[in-house]
Length: 313
Image (cartoon, rainbow, N blue to C red; front, side, top):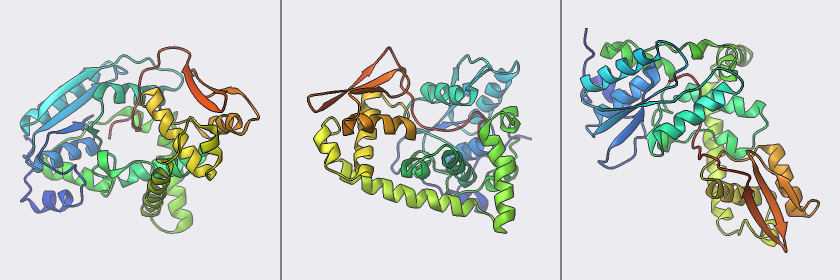
């Protein structure tokens, strides 16, 4: 049976569409579509807006049958009147596969692409960042701007697919316990639900929203700080100085993820004068000369944007 075209007058589609945060206006919507339930729901709801939609699929080349996924996504996009854009990246299994796949995926789709992560993914991201020692920026996790489904739950995207007659693709990576996100999903969240005697996903998603509000305030204050000036960084509270440095880092590196807590401590050892230089991350180093800071790259570093996971949503 062919999938039904998403119609905003359909009560199921319309109710979910009302809770999305697609960018305003009448412009094109670029949607990352792996073929899983979440990204298929993203594509469906984007089509229901009536705007031009491009389904962007990335084949990581990690499975012999991965090309079949690309064909399935293309067929669904065509059935719903969306344009298909396919990319192939060649990855090898091994260390840091989760991070490497995420970076390759974000490079392939480019900026301005929308992702189908839900409130459940948001909760997983908050927990992942907590166990890795994050601060307020990390806790803010994903933002609604490029994640229009953050108010929806995973079971709702699955129900929408059933309602429309879509058979979502199953990515084995979403069940692979090598990946931290999979263990968070399968082990940690159920345990927290049991301990709290309630569904903790809304609590964690709420924490992300409140952290995002705090981060927005820090951004506003940091806009008045020159991040290359040691005196400026030392004249403001540490959270504001860190925010200013992170903004500079993002601009200087072309969008690399901000340094973690340990790297940030190394940076501020230079700011505070206990060191004249330090290695930050990814071949980048920080140097202090006559009260000014300079970021240097050891070699070409490809830009990376956003965050996600190995398995498509």
